[in-house]
Figure 1: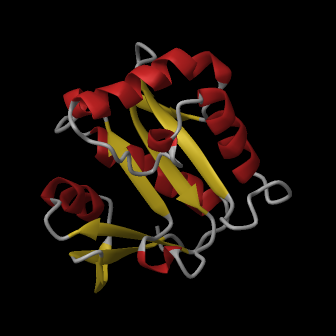
Figure 2 (figure 1 turned 45 degrees about the vertical axis):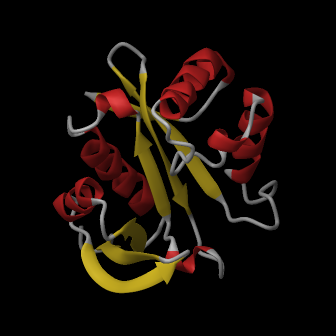
Length: 173
């Protein structure tokens, strides 16, 4: 159905199209995109996400992060998802992962499959658990998390929005 691939130069036009669909839908934040939504230069973004995937070159103000595009059988970018290997003080309430599905491809099970595949990757990297945050009003994402075995851990507030943290046990899975 879909496969996760690391961003690369060959996906530049598709990535820009992906990003523009969010903006055309009045969505200015693309969760899990490692700031793709905040840059006009794909090449610089690609350089940054590539560097952040390596402990030797990761931004010292961030954490080692793997970023993946979700491609369908036609090589269309359906979504984006990231895996943060550790959590710093800023990320403790946001978790190890963020993801987004392009507006025209939602409610088709893609987010559930993206997260399922990422949990396998997380386990292979040696993580014993993964934490993921979600706004309390984001019912589709909550369903995605629960379908993949996420267990409610706690709630928090960020910028006057209530959110929950879910935990995934990767050792028992």
